[in-house]
Length: 294
Image (cartoon, rainbow, N blue to C red; front, side, top):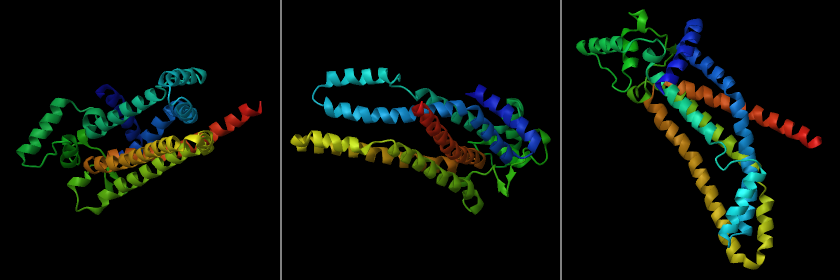
């Protein structure tokens, strides 16, 4: 993880040396990263669409072979083979996103190590100097403390953390009396809800609700069994909604205990993700229409 964080830090430092602002450098870094990962994002969204369609057919198979689990498993595997998909489709992109998220967290948590390339020995010397002067050192983010206390006097650890009047060094939970520390986390949380809502709506749009009605008609002679199946589907949808709400709640917790620089990266990524999802959806729709017209 440190290796990838170091690579990201080198890129961020290159951008920083051009724009001379940490916040702007993070935004441009986020844009660059999105461009590099665009082919993966297109593949992921195409996989999501195919998965949604398969889920419709899966539901059909579950109704049809609800009393024959062995036949159901055979038909499910046959369905994946026909659609040229793996049951684990999408896992790779999810893993890559998690790795990138952790690498960026490492980088923002330790900007002197990964961005400024300050040696570990020098960082320890700075920490000892601050402790000798009885200055409070943030144990979770010691390098942030070094930048705060020594940055203005030492070019070696200086980073321009002022972004539109906001100090990206600050951690909201440690600066509760400063109302400005809530601006980026709140915007990030709002963007997370919007992104989640768009993803949820896109999934619902791809579902054919008529499919369930057809099965209800098909099994109208077994009304109790159908009612049970319908309730199970509803429970699954409620669970998905709960999970969709859980992510923003987790985001609130993390954004409040991390430096604002990390929240700014997440906010930028969310905004870019919303725009990306919109344009990729349009692109895939046009491509599908062209393929169908042939």
